[in-house]
Amino acid sequence: MRRLLAGRPWVWSFAAAAAVWLAAIGYTGGTGAGGMLTAALSLAAFTVIVGIGQMFVITLGPGNVDLSLPANIGLSSAIAMTVMNGSDSRVALGLLAAVAAGLGVGLANYGLIRALRIPPIIATLSASFIIQSIDISYGRGLQIKPPDGFARVVGWQFAGVPLLAVGTVAFAALAAVVLHRTVFGRSVLAIGQNMRAAHLAGLRVERVRLATYALCGGLGGLDGALLAGYFRGANVDLGNEYLLSSIAVVVIGGTSVAGGRANVAGVWGGALFLVLLLTMLNTFGVSAGVRLLLTGLIIVGVVTAAGGPKAA
Amino acid sequence: MTQANKAGRILRTLLPTLSLALVMAGIAYLNPRAISYFGFTLMLNLAVPIALATMAQMFVIAGNDLDLSIGPFVGFVCCVAATLLRTSPALGSLVLLGGVGVYVALGALIHLRNLPSIVVTLGMSFVWQGMAILVLPAPGGRAPDWLQALMRIKPPLVPFPVVAAVLIAFCGYVGLMRTSYGAVLRGAGGNPAALRRAGWSLLRVKMTLFGLCGALGVLAGLALVGITTSGDANIGNGYTLLSIAGVILGGGEFVGGRVSPTGAVIGALTLAMAASPLLTFMRIPPDWQVAANGVILITVLAARVLISRRREAM
Image 1 (tube, each protein chain N blue to C red):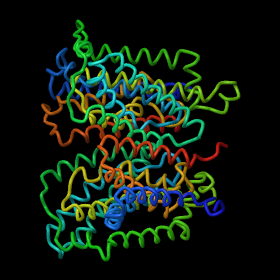
Image 2 (tube, each protein chain N blue to C red; image 1 turned 180 degrees about the vertical axis):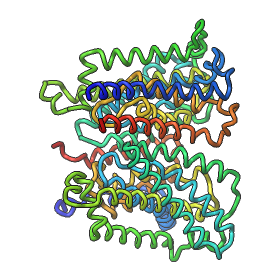
Image 3 (cartoon, each protein chain N blue to C red; image 1 turned 90 degrees about the vertical axis):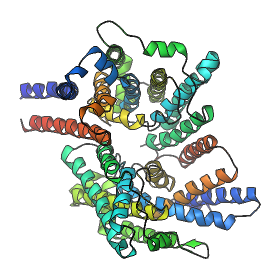
Image 4 (tube, rainbow over the protein chains, first blue to last red; image 1 turned 60 degrees about the vertical axis):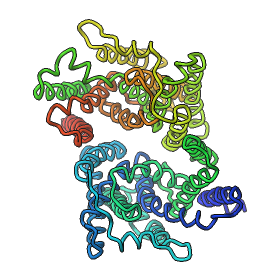
Protein backbone atom coordinates (compact mmCIF):
# COMPACT_ATOMS: atom_id res chain seq x y z
CA MET A 1 0.00 0.00 0.00
CA ARG A 2 2.78 2.35 0.95
CA ARG A 3 4.64 1.54 -2.24
CA LEU A 4 1.51 2.20 -4.22
CA LEU A 5 1.08 5.61 -2.62
CA ALA A 6 4.70 6.67 -2.73
CA GLY A 7 5.17 8.91 -5.73
CA ARG A 8 1.46 8.81 -6.50
CA PRO A 9 0.08 11.78 -4.57
CA TRP A 10 -2.96 11.88 -6.84
CA VAL A 11 -4.31 8.69 -5.28
CA TRP A 12 -5.06 10.79 -2.22
CA SER A 13 -7.32 13.11 -4.17
CA PHE A 14 -9.46 10.21 -5.42
CA ALA A 15 -9.49 8.65 -1.96
CA ALA A 16 -10.63 11.96 -0.50
CA ALA A 17 -13.32 12.28 -3.20
CA ALA A 18 -14.57 8.77 -2.44
CA ALA A 19 -14.56 9.51 1.28
CA VAL A 20 -16.75 12.62 0.99
CA TRP A 21 -19.10 10.79 -1.39
CA LEU A 22 -19.46 7.88 1.07
CA ALA A 23 -20.04 10.35 3.90
CA ALA A 24 -22.77 12.05 1.85
CA ILE A 25 -24.62 8.83 0.92
CA GLY A 26 -24.10 7.54 4.44
CA TYR A 27 -26.02 10.55 5.64
CA THR A 28 -28.87 10.13 3.17
CA GLY A 29 -28.93 6.35 3.73
CA GLY A 30 -27.98 5.60 0.15
CA THR A 31 -30.67 7.54 -1.64
CA GLY A 32 -29.51 9.76 -4.46
CA ALA A 33 -26.05 8.23 -4.56
CA GLY A 34 -26.12 7.84 -8.34
CA GLY A 35 -27.65 11.23 -9.00
CA MET A 36 -25.01 12.80 -6.82
CA LEU A 37 -22.26 11.21 -8.90
CA THR A 38 -23.90 12.22 -12.19
CA ALA A 39 -24.16 15.85 -11.16
CA ALA A 40 -20.65 15.82 -9.71
CA LEU A 41 -19.19 14.35 -12.92
CA SER A 42 -20.77 17.13 -15.02
CA LEU A 43 -19.64 19.95 -12.78
CA ALA A 44 -16.19 18.47 -12.25
CA ALA A 45 -15.69 18.25 -16.02
CA PHE A 46 -15.86 22.04 -16.34
CA THR A 47 -13.25 22.43 -13.61
CA VAL A 48 -11.05 19.77 -15.20
CA ILE A 49 -10.99 21.53 -18.58
CA VAL A 50 -9.61 24.78 -17.14
CA GLY A 51 -7.70 22.87 -14.46
CA ILE A 52 -5.62 21.08 -17.10
CA GLY A 53 -4.80 24.42 -18.75
CA GLN A 54 -3.85 25.85 -15.38
CA MET A 55 -1.79 22.72 -14.63
CA PHE A 56 0.38 23.24 -17.71
CA VAL A 57 0.89 26.89 -16.76
CA ILE A 58 1.71 26.14 -13.10
CA THR A 59 4.13 23.41 -14.19
CA LEU A 60 6.21 26.08 -15.98
CA GLY A 61 7.65 27.05 -12.61
CA PRO A 62 7.25 29.35 -9.63
CA GLY A 63 5.15 32.43 -10.27
CA ASN A 64 3.46 31.00 -13.35
CA VAL A 65 -0.30 31.09 -12.90
CA ASP A 66 -3.16 32.32 -15.06
CA LEU A 67 -5.45 34.67 -13.15
CA SER A 68 -7.31 35.76 -16.28
CA LEU A 69 -9.35 32.53 -16.57
CA PRO A 70 -12.56 33.92 -14.98
CA ALA A 71 -12.59 36.98 -17.24
CA ASN A 72 -11.67 34.79 -20.19
CA ILE A 73 -14.56 32.38 -19.49
CA GLY A 74 -17.00 35.27 -19.11
CA LEU A 75 -15.99 36.91 -22.38
CA SER A 76 -15.83 33.74 -24.47
CA SER A 77 -19.21 32.56 -23.18
CA ALA A 78 -20.71 35.83 -24.44
CA ILE A 79 -18.90 35.53 -27.78
CA ALA A 80 -20.01 31.92 -28.21
CA MET A 81 -23.65 32.77 -27.55
CA THR A 82 -23.55 35.75 -29.92
CA VAL A 83 -21.95 33.81 -32.75
CA MET A 84 -24.26 30.80 -32.31
CA ASN A 85 -27.20 33.14 -32.13
CA GLY A 86 -29.51 30.37 -31.03
CA SER A 87 -29.09 28.38 -34.21
CA ASP A 88 -27.87 24.78 -34.17
CA SER A 89 -26.16 25.13 -37.53
CA ARG A 90 -23.78 27.69 -36.09
CA VAL A 91 -22.62 25.68 -33.06
CA ALA A 92 -19.25 24.75 -34.55
CA LEU A 93 -18.65 28.34 -35.58
CA GLY A 94 -19.51 29.56 -32.07
CA LEU A 95 -17.19 27.04 -30.42
CA LEU A 96 -14.43 28.06 -32.79
CA ALA A 97 -14.98 31.73 -32.00
CA ALA A 98 -14.88 31.07 -28.25
CA VAL A 99 -11.66 29.06 -28.52
CA ALA A 100 -10.18 31.77 -30.75
CA ALA A 101 -11.10 34.44 -28.20
CA GLY A 102 -9.49 32.35 -25.47
CA LEU A 103 -6.36 31.84 -27.57
CA GLY A 104 -6.25 35.61 -28.08
CA VAL A 105 -6.40 36.14 -24.32
CA GLY A 106 -3.60 33.61 -23.82
CA LEU A 107 -1.43 35.30 -26.46
CA ALA A 108 -2.10 38.72 -24.90
CA ASN A 109 -1.08 37.32 -21.50
CA TYR A 110 2.16 36.00 -22.88
CA GLY A 111 2.78 39.24 -24.77
CA LEU A 112 2.54 41.18 -21.52
CA ILE A 113 4.79 38.74 -19.66
CA ARG A 114 7.41 38.90 -22.38
CA ALA A 115 7.26 42.56 -23.33
CA LEU A 116 7.08 43.93 -19.80
CA ARG A 117 9.17 41.19 -18.21
CA ILE A 118 6.76 41.07 -15.31
CA PRO A 119 5.69 38.08 -13.24
CA PRO A 120 2.85 36.19 -14.97
CA ILE A 121 0.62 36.64 -11.94
CA ILE A 122 0.58 40.43 -12.39
CA ALA A 123 0.45 40.25 -16.20
CA THR A 124 -2.58 37.96 -16.24
CA LEU A 125 -4.13 40.08 -13.49
CA SER A 126 -3.79 43.31 -15.51
CA ALA A 127 -5.06 41.54 -18.60
CA SER A 128 -8.06 40.22 -16.69
CA PHE A 129 -9.03 43.77 -15.61
CA ILE A 130 -9.19 44.80 -19.26
CA ILE A 131 -10.90 41.63 -20.49
CA GLN A 132 -13.48 42.02 -17.74
CA SER A 133 -14.27 45.53 -18.95
CA ILE A 134 -14.57 44.37 -22.54
CA ASP A 135 -16.92 41.64 -21.38
CA ILE A 136 -19.06 43.98 -19.29
CA SER A 137 -19.46 46.41 -22.13
CA TYR A 138 -19.95 43.68 -24.78
CA GLY A 139 -21.94 41.13 -22.89
CA ARG A 140 -24.20 43.22 -20.69
CA GLY A 141 -27.85 42.52 -21.19
CA LEU A 142 -27.00 39.73 -23.58
CA GLN A 143 -30.10 37.53 -23.50
CA ILE A 144 -29.21 35.01 -26.17
CA LYS A 145 -30.01 31.44 -25.21
CA PRO A 146 -27.78 28.63 -26.46
CA PRO A 147 -29.09 26.61 -29.42
CA ASP A 148 -31.35 23.78 -28.18
CA GLY A 149 -29.25 21.04 -29.72
CA PHE A 150 -26.04 22.40 -28.20
CA ALA A 151 -27.56 22.72 -24.74
CA ARG A 152 -28.94 19.18 -24.99
CA VAL A 153 -25.61 17.68 -26.06
CA VAL A 154 -23.73 19.46 -23.26
CA GLY A 155 -26.24 18.21 -20.68
CA TRP A 156 -26.83 14.78 -22.27
CA GLN A 157 -26.27 11.66 -20.19
CA PHE A 158 -26.44 7.95 -20.79
CA ALA A 159 -27.21 5.66 -17.85
CA GLY A 160 -26.17 8.38 -15.47
CA VAL A 161 -22.89 9.09 -17.20
CA PRO A 162 -22.77 12.60 -18.71
CA LEU A 163 -21.41 12.71 -22.25
CA LEU A 164 -19.41 15.78 -21.26
CA ALA A 165 -17.59 13.82 -18.55
CA VAL A 166 -16.73 11.01 -20.99
CA GLY A 167 -15.34 13.55 -23.42
CA THR A 168 -13.38 15.25 -20.67
CA VAL A 169 -11.88 11.95 -19.49
CA ALA A 170 -10.74 11.30 -23.06
CA PHE A 171 -9.36 14.82 -23.22
CA ALA A 172 -7.51 14.34 -19.92
CA ALA A 173 -5.97 11.11 -21.26
CA LEU A 174 -4.84 13.03 -24.31
CA ALA A 175 -3.39 15.77 -22.09
CA ALA A 176 -1.48 13.14 -20.11
CA VAL A 177 0.03 11.79 -23.33
CA VAL A 178 0.95 15.31 -24.41
CA LEU A 179 2.52 16.01 -21.02
CA HIS A 180 4.59 12.86 -20.70
CA ARG A 181 5.21 11.67 -24.25
CA THR A 182 5.63 14.71 -26.49
CA VAL A 183 8.43 17.19 -26.92
CA PHE A 184 6.11 20.01 -25.87
CA GLY A 185 5.01 18.36 -22.62
CA ARG A 186 8.49 17.31 -21.65
CA SER A 187 9.76 20.80 -22.43
CA VAL A 188 7.13 22.25 -20.06
CA LEU A 189 8.31 19.89 -17.32
CA ALA A 190 11.98 20.66 -18.01
CA ILE A 191 11.39 24.41 -17.92
CA GLY A 192 9.56 24.03 -14.63
CA GLN A 193 12.45 22.09 -13.13
CA ASN A 194 15.10 24.56 -14.20
CA MET A 195 14.44 27.23 -16.78
CA ARG A 196 18.10 28.09 -17.24
CA ALA A 197 19.15 24.48 -17.68
CA ALA A 198 16.33 23.96 -20.17
CA HIS A 199 17.50 26.97 -22.12
CA LEU A 200 21.12 25.80 -22.10
CA ALA A 201 20.00 22.35 -23.24
CA GLY A 202 18.71 24.00 -26.37
CA LEU A 203 14.99 24.05 -25.64
CA ARG A 204 13.08 26.91 -27.16
CA VAL A 205 11.91 28.13 -23.78
CA GLU A 206 9.99 31.19 -24.91
CA ARG A 207 8.16 29.31 -27.65
CA VAL A 208 7.04 26.67 -25.16
CA ARG A 209 5.85 29.31 -22.70
CA LEU A 210 3.94 31.06 -25.47
CA ALA A 211 2.27 27.78 -26.46
CA THR A 212 1.42 26.99 -22.82
CA TYR A 213 -0.31 30.30 -22.14
CA ALA A 214 -2.13 30.05 -25.48
CA LEU A 215 -3.24 26.50 -24.59
CA CYS A 216 -4.56 27.61 -21.21
CA GLY A 217 -6.37 30.56 -22.79
CA GLY A 218 -7.89 28.37 -25.49
CA LEU A 219 -9.17 25.87 -22.92
CA GLY A 220 -10.67 28.76 -20.95
CA GLY A 221 -12.49 29.87 -24.11
CA LEU A 222 -13.80 26.35 -24.75
CA ASP A 223 -14.95 26.06 -21.14
CA GLY A 224 -16.78 29.38 -21.42
CA ALA A 225 -18.77 28.16 -24.43
CA LEU A 226 -19.61 24.81 -22.76
CA LEU A 227 -20.62 26.50 -19.50
CA ALA A 228 -22.94 28.84 -21.39
CA GLY A 229 -24.50 25.77 -23.01
CA TYR A 230 -24.89 23.94 -19.69
CA PHE A 231 -26.27 26.89 -17.73
CA ARG A 232 -28.40 28.14 -20.64
CA GLY A 233 -26.84 31.49 -21.30
CA ALA A 234 -23.72 33.65 -21.06
CA ASN A 235 -22.96 35.63 -17.95
CA VAL A 236 -20.21 38.01 -16.86
CA ASP A 237 -19.86 36.13 -13.56
CA LEU A 238 -19.93 32.66 -15.14
CA GLY A 239 -16.24 32.07 -14.58
CA ASN A 240 -15.77 33.66 -11.16
CA GLU A 241 -15.45 30.46 -9.15
CA TYR A 242 -12.78 29.10 -11.48
CA LEU A 243 -10.15 31.57 -10.28
CA LEU A 244 -9.76 29.61 -7.07
CA SER A 245 -10.96 26.19 -8.11
CA SER A 246 -8.71 25.91 -11.18
CA ILE A 247 -5.66 26.43 -8.95
CA ALA A 248 -7.02 24.35 -6.07
CA VAL A 249 -7.71 21.20 -8.13
CA VAL A 250 -4.23 21.33 -9.65
CA VAL A 251 -2.55 21.49 -6.27
CA ILE A 252 -4.84 18.98 -4.53
CA GLY A 253 -4.16 16.64 -7.45
CA GLY A 254 -0.49 16.46 -6.60
CA THR A 255 0.97 18.91 -9.12
CA SER A 256 3.84 20.85 -7.60
CA VAL A 257 3.32 24.61 -7.21
CA ALA A 258 7.07 24.94 -7.55
CA GLY A 259 6.76 23.59 -11.09
CA GLY A 260 8.33 20.74 -12.96
CA ARG A 261 6.06 18.01 -11.62
CA ALA A 262 2.53 17.59 -12.95
CA ASN A 263 -0.25 15.07 -12.73
CA VAL A 264 -3.26 14.98 -15.01
CA ALA A 265 -5.22 12.25 -13.22
CA GLY A 266 -4.94 14.25 -10.03
CA VAL A 267 -6.79 17.15 -11.66
CA TRP A 268 -9.81 14.86 -12.06
CA GLY A 269 -9.42 13.62 -8.51
CA GLY A 270 -9.14 17.16 -7.16
CA ALA A 271 -12.14 18.37 -9.16
CA LEU A 272 -14.32 15.44 -8.06
CA PHE A 273 -13.21 16.00 -4.49
CA LEU A 274 -14.11 19.71 -4.55
CA VAL A 275 -17.51 19.15 -6.19
CA LEU A 276 -18.42 16.18 -3.99
CA LEU A 277 -17.30 18.08 -0.92
CA LEU A 278 -19.81 20.81 -1.76
CA THR A 279 -22.46 18.14 -2.46
CA MET A 280 -21.77 16.50 0.88
CA LEU A 281 -22.01 19.76 2.80
CA ASN A 282 -25.24 20.53 0.95
CA THR A 283 -26.78 17.18 1.89
CA PHE A 284 -25.80 17.80 5.49
CA GLY A 285 -27.90 20.92 5.13
CA VAL A 286 -25.29 23.26 6.55
CA SER A 287 -25.58 26.99 5.92
CA ALA A 288 -23.58 28.78 3.24
CA GLY A 289 -21.20 30.15 5.85
CA VAL A 290 -20.37 26.76 7.38
CA ARG A 291 -20.01 25.29 3.90
CA LEU A 292 -17.38 27.86 2.91
CA LEU A 293 -15.63 27.57 6.27
CA LEU A 294 -15.35 23.78 6.04
CA THR A 295 -14.30 23.91 2.37
CA GLY A 296 -11.45 26.24 3.29
CA LEU A 297 -10.37 24.25 6.33
CA ILE A 298 -10.39 21.01 4.36
CA ILE A 299 -8.32 22.54 1.53
CA VAL A 300 -5.76 23.81 4.05
CA GLY A 301 -5.84 20.44 5.82
CA VAL A 302 -5.30 18.45 2.62
CA VAL A 303 -2.42 20.68 1.55
CA THR A 304 -0.84 20.46 4.99
CA ALA A 305 -1.18 16.68 5.07
CA ALA A 306 0.27 16.33 1.59
CA GLY A 307 3.16 18.52 2.70
CA GLY A 308 5.30 20.83 0.65
CA PRO A 309 8.49 20.00 -1.21
CA LYS A 310 11.24 19.03 1.20
CA ALA A 311 13.36 22.00 2.10
CA ALA A 312 16.68 21.89 0.33
CA MET B 1 28.13 54.73 -16.09
CA THR B 2 27.58 55.06 -12.37
CA GLN B 3 25.94 58.40 -12.96
CA ALA B 4 23.54 56.94 -15.53
CA ASN B 5 22.88 54.10 -13.12
CA LYS B 6 22.08 56.55 -10.37
CA ALA B 7 19.78 58.56 -12.64
CA GLY B 8 18.01 55.36 -13.63
CA ARG B 9 17.57 54.35 -10.04
CA ILE B 10 16.19 57.74 -9.05
CA LEU B 11 13.83 57.65 -12.03
CA ARG B 12 12.68 54.20 -10.97
CA THR B 13 12.08 55.32 -7.40
CA LEU B 14 10.12 58.29 -8.63
CA LEU B 15 8.02 56.22 -11.03
CA PRO B 16 5.16 55.50 -8.59
CA THR B 17 4.93 59.20 -7.73
CA LEU B 18 5.06 60.14 -11.40
CA SER B 19 2.24 57.78 -12.25
CA LEU B 20 0.12 59.19 -9.44
CA ALA B 21 0.86 62.72 -10.70
CA LEU B 22 -0.08 61.64 -14.21
CA VAL B 23 -3.41 60.22 -13.12
CA MET B 24 -4.08 63.40 -11.14
CA ALA B 25 -3.13 65.59 -14.11
CA GLY B 26 -5.56 63.63 -16.24
CA ILE B 27 -8.32 64.15 -13.72
CA ALA B 28 -7.48 67.86 -13.41
CA TYR B 29 -7.65 68.21 -17.18
CA LEU B 30 -10.99 66.46 -17.45
CA ASN B 31 -12.53 68.09 -14.42
CA PRO B 32 -10.61 70.99 -12.81
CA ARG B 33 -13.12 71.21 -9.98
CA ALA B 34 -12.04 67.77 -8.74
CA ILE B 35 -8.72 69.23 -7.58
CA SER B 36 -10.08 70.70 -4.37
CA TYR B 37 -10.46 69.78 -0.72
CA PHE B 38 -13.90 68.34 -1.39
CA GLY B 39 -12.89 66.66 -4.63
CA PHE B 40 -9.96 64.84 -3.03
CA THR B 41 -12.06 63.78 -0.07
CA LEU B 42 -14.53 62.24 -2.50
CA MET B 43 -11.98 60.73 -4.90
CA LEU B 44 -9.84 59.23 -2.19
CA ASN B 45 -12.84 58.09 -0.18
CA LEU B 46 -11.75 54.45 -0.18
CA ALA B 47 -8.02 55.15 -0.30
CA VAL B 48 -7.41 54.58 3.42
CA PRO B 49 -8.61 50.95 3.55
CA ILE B 50 -6.96 50.19 0.20
CA ALA B 51 -3.66 51.67 1.42
CA LEU B 52 -3.83 49.63 4.64
CA ALA B 53 -4.65 46.42 2.77
CA THR B 54 -1.81 47.09 0.33
CA MET B 55 0.55 47.61 3.26
CA ALA B 56 -0.63 44.30 4.72
CA GLN B 57 0.05 42.52 1.43
CA MET B 58 3.45 44.22 1.21
CA PHE B 59 4.71 42.59 4.40
CA VAL B 60 3.79 39.14 3.11
CA ILE B 61 5.35 39.83 -0.30
CA ALA B 62 8.52 41.02 1.47
CA GLY B 63 8.98 37.42 2.60
CA ASN B 64 8.42 36.02 -0.92
CA ASP B 65 4.90 34.89 -0.06
CA LEU B 66 1.51 36.00 -1.30
CA ASP B 67 -1.72 36.44 0.64
CA LEU B 68 -4.74 35.60 -1.51
CA SER B 69 -7.04 35.79 1.51
CA ILE B 70 -6.55 39.42 2.51
CA GLY B 71 -9.73 40.55 0.71
CA PRO B 72 -12.10 38.10 2.42
CA PHE B 73 -10.26 38.78 5.70
CA VAL B 74 -10.96 42.52 5.35
CA GLY B 75 -14.60 41.60 4.69
CA PHE B 76 -14.64 39.38 7.80
CA VAL B 77 -13.26 42.24 9.93
CA CYS B 78 -15.96 44.55 8.51
CA CYS B 79 -18.68 42.09 9.52
CA VAL B 80 -17.28 41.64 13.02
CA ALA B 81 -16.93 45.39 13.45
CA ALA B 82 -20.49 46.02 12.26
CA THR B 83 -21.94 43.48 14.72
CA LEU B 84 -19.89 42.18 17.65
CA LEU B 85 -17.64 45.19 18.07
CA ARG B 86 -20.68 47.40 18.47
CA THR B 87 -22.77 45.21 20.75
CA SER B 88 -19.95 43.87 22.92
CA PRO B 89 -16.66 45.69 22.32
CA ALA B 90 -14.63 43.31 24.48
CA LEU B 91 -15.72 40.18 22.63
CA GLY B 92 -15.40 41.93 19.26
CA SER B 93 -11.83 43.00 20.00
CA LEU B 94 -11.03 39.47 21.14
CA VAL B 95 -12.33 38.01 17.85
CA LEU B 96 -10.26 40.49 15.82
CA LEU B 97 -7.17 39.68 17.90
CA GLY B 98 -7.90 36.02 17.25
CA GLY B 99 -7.87 36.81 13.52
CA VAL B 100 -4.37 38.24 13.85
CA GLY B 101 -3.43 35.15 15.84
CA VAL B 102 -4.60 32.93 12.99
CA TYR B 103 -2.36 34.90 10.63
CA VAL B 104 0.63 34.36 12.93
CA ALA B 105 -0.18 30.64 13.05
CA LEU B 106 -0.42 30.56 9.24
CA GLY B 107 3.05 32.08 8.99
CA ALA B 108 4.36 29.33 11.26
CA LEU B 109 2.50 26.58 9.36
CA ILE B 110 3.73 27.78 5.98
CA HIS B 111 7.30 27.94 7.20
CA LEU B 112 7.39 24.69 9.18
CA ARG B 113 5.69 22.52 6.56
CA ASN B 114 7.30 24.43 3.66
CA LEU B 115 3.86 24.94 2.07
CA PRO B 116 3.07 27.15 -0.92
CA SER B 117 1.54 30.30 0.57
CA ILE B 118 -0.68 30.79 -2.49
CA VAL B 119 -2.54 27.56 -1.82
CA VAL B 120 -2.82 27.92 1.94
CA THR B 121 -4.13 31.49 1.72
CA LEU B 122 -6.45 30.38 -1.10
CA GLY B 123 -7.99 27.92 1.33
CA MET B 124 -8.09 30.58 4.04
CA SER B 125 -10.01 32.90 1.72
CA PHE B 126 -12.91 30.39 1.90
CA VAL B 127 -12.56 30.24 5.67
CA TRP B 128 -12.76 34.04 6.16
CA GLN B 129 -15.62 34.33 3.70
CA GLY B 130 -17.51 31.60 5.54
CA MET B 131 -16.88 33.18 8.94
CA ALA B 132 -18.01 36.57 7.59
CA ILE B 133 -21.30 35.06 6.43
CA LEU B 134 -21.74 33.30 9.78
CA VAL B 135 -21.22 36.58 11.65
CA LEU B 136 -23.40 38.61 9.30
CA PRO B 137 -25.62 36.45 7.05
CA ALA B 138 -27.12 39.42 5.17
CA PRO B 139 -25.59 42.83 4.49
CA GLY B 140 -26.33 45.16 7.36
CA GLY B 141 -25.21 45.80 10.89
CA ARG B 142 -23.83 49.09 12.00
CA ALA B 143 -20.26 50.24 12.54
CA PRO B 144 -19.40 51.57 16.04
CA ASP B 145 -19.98 55.31 16.28
CA TRP B 146 -16.37 56.09 17.16
CA LEU B 147 -15.20 54.40 13.96
CA GLN B 148 -17.62 56.38 11.83
CA ALA B 149 -16.57 59.58 13.59
CA LEU B 150 -12.90 58.74 13.05
CA MET B 151 -13.35 58.27 9.32
CA ARG B 152 -15.35 61.49 9.05
CA ILE B 153 -12.69 63.74 10.55
CA LYS B 154 -12.19 66.88 8.48
CA PRO B 155 -8.74 68.28 9.22
CA PRO B 156 -8.00 71.85 8.09
CA LEU B 157 -6.44 72.39 4.65
CA VAL B 158 -5.47 68.80 3.87
CA PRO B 159 -8.19 66.18 3.34
CA PHE B 160 -8.27 63.28 5.81
CA PRO B 161 -7.36 60.49 3.34
CA VAL B 162 -4.18 62.36 2.40
CA VAL B 163 -3.20 62.85 6.05
CA ALA B 164 -3.90 59.18 6.78
CA ALA B 165 -1.96 58.00 3.72
CA VAL B 166 1.10 60.05 4.70
CA LEU B 167 0.89 58.66 8.23
CA ILE B 168 0.61 55.05 7.02
CA ALA B 169 3.50 55.50 4.60
CA PHE B 170 5.65 57.11 7.29
CA CYS B 171 5.04 54.33 9.83
CA GLY B 172 5.73 51.67 7.21
CA TYR B 173 8.89 53.41 6.04
CA VAL B 174 10.34 53.84 9.50
CA GLY B 175 9.38 50.34 10.61
CA LEU B 176 10.58 48.38 7.60
CA MET B 177 13.34 50.52 6.10
CA ARG B 178 14.89 52.29 9.10
CA THR B 179 14.96 49.74 11.90
CA SER B 180 17.34 46.82 12.23
CA TYR B 181 14.56 44.25 12.59
CA GLY B 182 12.98 45.75 9.45
CA ALA B 183 16.15 44.83 7.57
CA VAL B 184 15.89 41.29 8.97
CA LEU B 185 12.27 41.08 7.79
CA ARG B 186 13.26 42.12 4.28
CA GLY B 187 16.13 39.68 4.43
CA ALA B 188 13.65 36.81 4.72
CA GLY B 189 12.78 37.46 1.09
CA GLY B 190 16.22 38.57 -0.03
CA ASN B 191 18.48 35.86 1.32
CA PRO B 192 16.91 33.53 3.85
CA ALA B 193 19.95 31.26 3.96
CA ALA B 194 22.21 34.13 5.02
CA LEU B 195 19.66 35.18 7.59
CA ARG B 196 19.58 31.73 9.12
CA ARG B 197 23.36 31.53 9.25
CA ALA B 198 23.46 34.89 10.98
CA GLY B 199 21.45 33.29 13.75
CA TRP B 200 18.00 34.75 13.13
CA SER B 201 14.97 32.56 13.48
CA LEU B 202 13.25 32.37 10.09
CA LEU B 203 10.19 30.95 11.82
CA ARG B 204 9.87 34.07 13.95
CA VAL B 205 10.40 36.33 10.94
CA LYS B 206 7.64 34.56 8.96
CA MET B 207 5.31 34.73 11.95
CA THR B 208 6.04 38.45 12.34
CA LEU B 209 5.44 39.17 8.65
CA PHE B 210 2.12 37.32 8.62
CA GLY B 211 1.14 38.82 11.97
CA LEU B 212 1.77 42.33 10.63
CA CYS B 213 -0.30 41.45 7.57
CA GLY B 214 -3.17 40.33 9.81
CA ALA B 215 -2.94 43.42 12.03
CA LEU B 216 -2.97 45.78 9.04
CA GLY B 217 -5.80 43.75 7.53
CA VAL B 218 -7.81 44.39 10.72
CA LEU B 219 -7.08 48.13 10.44
CA ALA B 220 -8.12 48.08 6.77
CA GLY B 221 -11.40 46.39 7.64
CA LEU B 222 -12.09 48.86 10.46
CA ALA B 223 -11.37 51.81 8.16
CA LEU B 224 -13.60 50.35 5.45
CA VAL B 225 -16.55 49.74 7.73
CA GLY B 226 -16.10 53.22 9.22
CA ILE B 227 -16.69 54.63 5.74
CA THR B 228 -19.48 52.34 4.58
CA THR B 229 -21.07 52.32 8.11
CA SER B 230 -22.53 48.84 7.54
CA GLY B 231 -21.02 45.45 6.86
CA ASP B 232 -21.27 42.97 3.99
CA ALA B 233 -19.51 39.61 3.73
CA ASN B 234 -18.49 40.30 0.13
CA ILE B 235 -17.37 43.87 0.66
CA GLY B 236 -13.65 43.13 0.77
CA ASN B 237 -13.34 40.59 -2.04
CA GLY B 238 -11.81 43.02 -4.52
CA TYR B 239 -9.06 43.92 -2.07
CA THR B 240 -6.97 40.82 -2.73
CA LEU B 241 -6.14 41.78 -6.29
CA LEU B 242 -6.09 45.53 -5.58
CA SER B 243 -3.53 45.06 -2.80
CA ILE B 244 -1.23 42.94 -4.97
CA ALA B 245 -1.50 45.47 -7.80
CA GLY B 246 -0.79 48.31 -5.37
CA VAL B 247 2.42 46.71 -4.09
CA ILE B 248 3.68 46.08 -7.63
CA LEU B 249 2.67 49.57 -8.82
CA GLY B 250 4.63 50.97 -5.90
CA GLY B 251 7.83 49.37 -7.13
CA GLY B 252 7.68 46.14 -5.19
CA GLU B 253 8.76 42.81 -6.61
CA PHE B 254 7.49 39.32 -5.93
CA VAL B 255 10.85 37.89 -5.01
CA GLY B 256 13.89 39.13 -3.21
CA GLY B 257 12.30 41.11 -0.39
CA ARG B 258 12.28 44.20 -2.58
CA VAL B 259 9.32 46.24 -1.43
CA SER B 260 8.70 49.89 -0.74
CA PRO B 261 6.21 51.05 1.93
CA THR B 262 5.92 54.58 0.56
CA GLY B 263 5.63 53.20 -2.97
CA ALA B 264 2.90 50.79 -1.86
CA VAL B 265 0.82 53.60 -0.39
CA ILE B 266 1.28 55.71 -3.53
CA GLY B 267 0.33 52.70 -5.64
CA ALA B 268 -2.79 52.24 -3.55
CA LEU B 269 -3.71 55.93 -3.95
CA THR B 270 -3.29 55.65 -7.73
CA LEU B 271 -5.59 52.63 -7.87
CA ALA B 272 -8.11 54.26 -5.52
CA MET B 273 -8.29 57.29 -7.80
CA ALA B 274 -8.56 55.21 -10.93
CA ALA B 275 -11.48 53.35 -9.38
CA SER B 276 -13.11 56.39 -7.80
CA PRO B 277 -16.74 57.20 -8.44
CA LEU B 278 -15.63 60.54 -9.85
CA LEU B 279 -14.58 58.81 -13.06
CA THR B 280 -18.26 58.44 -13.86
CA PHE B 281 -18.53 62.20 -14.13
CA MET B 282 -15.57 62.31 -16.45
CA ARG B 283 -16.92 60.75 -19.58
CA ILE B 284 -15.34 57.41 -18.67
CA PRO B 285 -18.28 55.02 -18.75
CA PRO B 286 -18.54 52.75 -15.68
CA ASP B 287 -18.04 49.69 -17.89
CA TRP B 288 -14.47 50.68 -18.51
CA GLN B 289 -13.48 51.63 -14.97
CA VAL B 290 -12.06 48.18 -14.25
CA ALA B 291 -10.04 48.46 -17.43
CA ALA B 292 -8.63 51.78 -16.19
CA ASN B 293 -6.88 49.83 -13.42
CA GLY B 294 -5.45 47.38 -15.92
CA VAL B 295 -4.26 50.12 -18.26
CA ILE B 296 -2.57 52.03 -15.44
CA LEU B 297 -0.82 48.87 -14.24
CA ILE B 298 0.41 48.02 -17.72
CA THR B 299 1.54 51.59 -18.48
CA VAL B 300 3.54 51.90 -15.27
CA LEU B 301 5.14 48.50 -15.70
CA ALA B 302 6.01 49.32 -19.32
CA ALA B 303 7.63 52.57 -18.17
CA ARG B 304 9.61 50.63 -15.58
CA VAL B 305 10.89 48.25 -18.27
CA LEU B 306 11.92 51.16 -20.49
CA ILE B 307 13.91 52.71 -17.65
CA SER B 308 15.63 49.44 -16.73
CA ARG B 309 16.51 48.71 -20.36
CA ARG B 310 18.12 52.12 -20.74
CA ARG B 311 20.14 51.41 -17.62
CA GLU B 312 21.31 48.09 -18.98
CA ALA B 313 22.22 49.62 -22.33
CA MET B 314 24.40 52.17 -20.63
